[in-house]
Image (cartoon, rainbow, N blue to C red):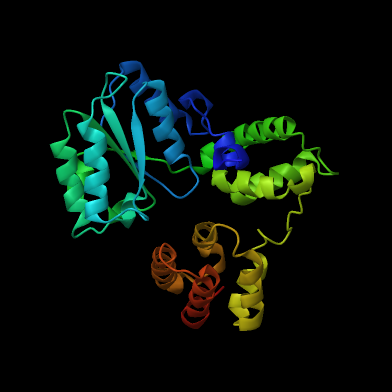
Length: 314
């Protein structure tokens, strides 16, 4: 069985923009591009699992364009990029239009060497190719690439979240029906809690759903304490390292950026006003490090330890 046949994120990946789970205005923007029939060079930016690669593929499919996918974190050296892109770009498209290079995780490319080279590739093959770059952190993409691409933000606002989660619920119920996975005593509320736990990382939602459906029976166990940040704030305020470490260990499987964001969103009610600037600097530093570290639990514990040592609570 192939990866596309086994993994739900691949098996049920939307092939059309209309079927993607995106904020309304962003979906409208991509729909207009399809109507125009012209694909520009594009830079998609946003956290993991929001659908950047899915949208890139859907655009190519709906415009009937040949494309290849290059992973910047795995194939990011200059020679590999040059060879793969040149071989692809040098041949004539069977569809008759331009060809498209989808460069995933472009923010992993070296900004001193590989990214400037990529700028040259975009210019060299401009007659025959378009480039769609995806990244989690747009500040790690050099300005010359920004200026050669339309930048599209995939960030999800709180205003959009409820509607998107409702769309994901309908997608999940459809997938469960298709997979023949009966709900094993799990209410729609339980499924909704799983969606809310990982939203807007829709890829993570589907991966967790598939993991909970091993054996053909859906068995979701949503940890009620996962989003109970009161326990974390209490441990930080009391400078209780053991309790804080336990909380992190129990919750680090959540997207760590969501933990940083929750603390940031609630700092005015939990943190002394004089300590807020220091907290912001700590959170920003460790969220940036989270993109590179191998051990997210250790990184989060280090962050919370620094918060305990340097921040005063209400």
